[in-house]
Image 1 (cartoon, rainbow, N blue to C red):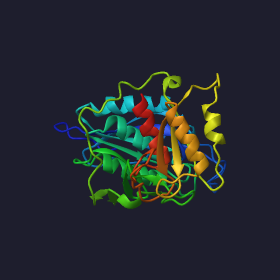
Image 2 (cartoon, rainbow, N blue to C red; image 1 turned 90 degrees about the vertical axis):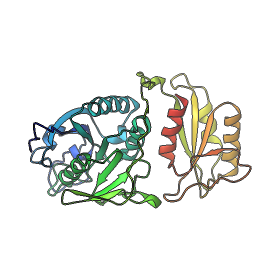
Image 3 (cartoon, rainbow, N blue to C red; image 1 turned 90 degrees about the horizontal axis):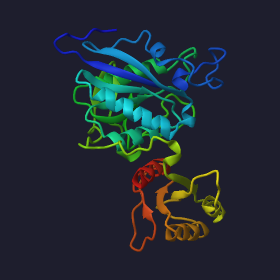
Length: 320
């Protein structure tokens, strides 16, 4: 690893959370039959050199398949990011993460931290045991972004592309270049260790707070997502509202709508009843590009450009 100058020490801290990037399969030719979260983050950094003048540090925050990401891990991750970014010699933080919920974690961290320094999530579509894993290059590129002097906010780096936290989406199930930023486009590209930025970094907001996040995961507001589709009914919303001693009361509802925020009439009627009963309701389009354009007389709020999964996070945070 490179050694920083004593007069200007700079560190990039790499936080591990598991995912495919740390997965192992029984043989190197198997890119899908692996177990996620098997390789520690310190081992993932083996053989990866930091940029000149930068040293690397590693810390394991979690070791999970990202499909199982939780509020508890998000809170712990936010706390560790805040801790490290507060250190004067830390240039930025890299988070190794599974691809399934990477966009949700990125949006969450940007929402609660809005950091002045960079937090860069990276991932892999092939496990660490693969004959030709993509993780090492993605980690190297993410470190380059985290060490970039003017970088700020939360981004994701995959296949050489830098994507903003508000825009990043997983759009492919298998290919190495699995992420996109929709209409917004990428923030930039990493080319042989150099970052070429083509638009602004995600905005940094002074005073963004995360101290109100509940320590007990059961105390987080329960917000569910329901999809509108041909032949939809009110059954799902009514079931979610039903009393269940094993589940906390429904506090919010995100509707994954068709097109420009449209809903099947039966689903819309049930959603309006839920809203009248005090449940917060938010519409988010299931389309992968574009945004909901509000119309006069809309009775249900819309989430604008946010996808349903990001709208759920925004509504959850608003309810805390």
